[in-house]
Image (cartoon, rainbow, N blue to C red; front, side):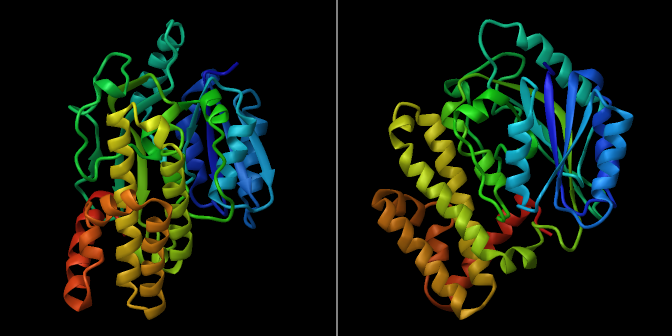
Length: 341
C-alpha cells in the first residue's frame, strides 16, 4: 500500500500539467500519482500516458468521459490505494522541502495507536503579477507538533478556512463518510472540505508552505466574471452545503467548535453567492438571490436567522442601491481573503 495517493484532475491541461506532475514525483515510491484525464480534447491524455510509462510504479493514467472537477476527484478517491489522499489541481504545484517533511511526518504518524484523519498545512496564493504572496496559515489556531481534536482548536479569523489546498484526508474516511461530489459542477471543492468534517476525529497541523495555488488565468473558475457566469453552480453548491449542515445538526450538537467552524464557512459561501448575484446587476439574478434565502428559510428557520445576521447576510439583504453598495464593499473583504481575480 502506498502512503499517499495524489489525484490530479485534468481537463485540457497540456500547457501546465507537467510542472504539477514533476513537483509531485519528488515523493518517490511513497506516493501514487493518479492523473485523471476528464475527457480532455488536447494532449492531456498523451502526456498522462507518457508519465505512466516512464514511472509505472508511481504514476497511473486514468481516462474518463468529461464529468467536471468533482467527477474527477470522485474517480481519484475510487482508484486510490494510498492510506492518505490529496487533490492537487493541474495548474498548481507543491514545494519540495515541505513535501518531504509532510511525507516523513505521515510515515511517523501511521505507526501511532490513534488514527490520523486529516493532515493540514499552509498554502500560498501564487497570484499572477503580485510580488508579495499571501499565505494561508493556521499558526495560533491549530496546535502544532501533536495529534489534536476539535476541542483543541482555537478561534479562526474570518477568511481563515481549511480549503482543499490545505488538507490531506485519510482515504478510508472519505469513502466511509459517503462523500460524492456532484458532476458538471464547479466550486465543489467547498463540499470536499465541508462534508467530511463531522467524521474527522484526530488532526495534525504542520506549519509549512506546501501547496502553491496559482491564480491568474482569465478562464479560471475563481475569476469573478467567470463565477458570475456560473452562478447557478455556485448556488447549487451553496444549497448542498445548507442541506448537509441541517442534516448533521445532531452530530454537531455535541461539538460546538466544529459546529461554529462549519457555520462560519457556510456563512461566507452564502455571502459570496449573494454578492455575486448583486454584482451581476441582472434583475433575474436578484430574484435568484431572493430564492436562495427563501430556500434557506424553508430548510431551517433558525439557520436562516443566523445567516441573515451573520458575516454579511444583513448587508446582502438591505434594499436598494445603498444596500447593494454595502454588500459590494463587504465582498471586497471576501475578495481580499480568497484572492478572486
